[in-house]
Length: 115
Length: 242
Image (cartoon, rainbow over all chains, first blue to last red; front, side):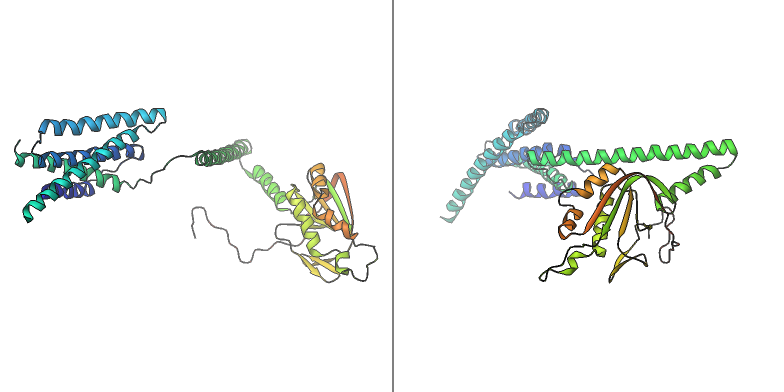
């Protein structure tokens, strides 16, 4: 659990130190990318708790989801319809589901340890 | 899959996530939010205003270019820019109200009321005050009057109109009724706005103050007579910022 958090901190540090800033028209793409990464992290934690972690599924899921979300955002921009909401909902729902499952695993483990 | 390996992939993705997050936060993006129709209209309005401003600036560029051309022409023709500078100087004097000028306009004659003042009435309402003259002058200016004089006294931007008891004091000169206000501008527009319902003169006539408005094809207005002095103000050199 601690290693992903360390990674998060390292990433934030990297981002703060790097001179890159984002033009405003790409901000929706970036937020979608953030959501995709969050989704992948939670999915990865969940699957590693279930001992069913698969590198291929994990990596391909991250990139494929991010690309699909970016395409949806682009189409939405062209049409003037915020289609990227679909990606937000999908990622968001899965995020909470994964989080709920992770919570249950951790609670079960804590109860076992207490016994 | 071994658990040891999965944690490193998670680590990598977490780095990416943190990187994205901090970039997004650092970029200081104020989300425009949902663009409603009213927001859209306000933005359109802004754009229009800016376009008008741009057009005005373009116009002033062409004006300045023409002026420059004039200077260059007179320089090449007579070897000096004296003539065109003289012309400009005259124009500026006209604008400042220092020259005797002529043009179409209206003549307003105002006189105190000759009605009998009732016992309960306020006699103040039946005579002309400084403020009445000021209001009329302001209305003339609003209607596009280019030059205004009261009893022959040229009214400038710095002119003061004060109360002096039974008389009014315009730039230190005493003036009594009748007040003859001459204004150069579009006679029709000036008359219409001066006599419009709810205009100041319309209100004055309730108390019987006599106001006569005549259009004229040719009015002559003298220039400002007293010398203009600048005691406190100084001009600023171009680019100076204090």
